[in-house]
Image 1 (tube, rainbow, N blue to C red):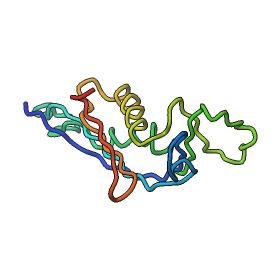
Image 2 (spheres, rainbow, N blue to C red; image 1 turned 180 degrees about the horizontal axis):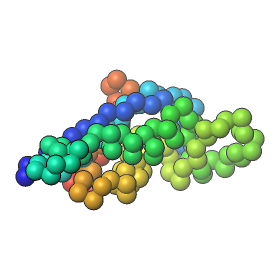
Image 3 (cartoon, rainbow, N blue to C red; image 1 turned 60 degrees about the horizontal axis):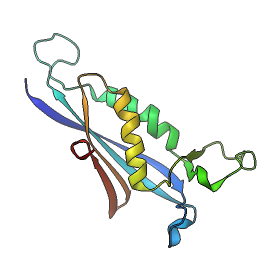
Length: 146
C-alpha cells in the first residue's frame, strides 16, 4: 500500500490582539485566515468500502476541522486570558474566546494541532498545518519537528 499525503483547505475570519507586542498588533485587529491541514495514511485498496482508493474521505477531515476550529473561531475575537477580561461586560459578543496563550499565528497552530490530532481516525496521521494571516505572512507546523 502506498502512503499518500492529502490536504484540505479552510478559510475563516478572526480578530485578535497580542499582549505585550511592540507594534500595532497589540490592538484588536482581524485577518482573513487561510488554514491548510495535511494528513497522511495508506491508500485503501481492495476493501470494497466507500472510501476505496482513498487515504481518508476529505469530508472526515472537513468535519473535524470545521467542528473544532472553523465553526468556533470564525468571526470571533480571540484574546489571551491573561488580559483579565470580564466576559460579562462583553456579553454582547457571543464569540469572545479567551485562550491560555498569546494568540499569535504560531501559538494558534500549536493549539490547533493538538485539537486535530485527538480526533483523527487511528490510521491517519497529522503531518502539516499552515495558517496564513495575510497574503504575505504565514506560519507552519510540521509533525516531524514536534
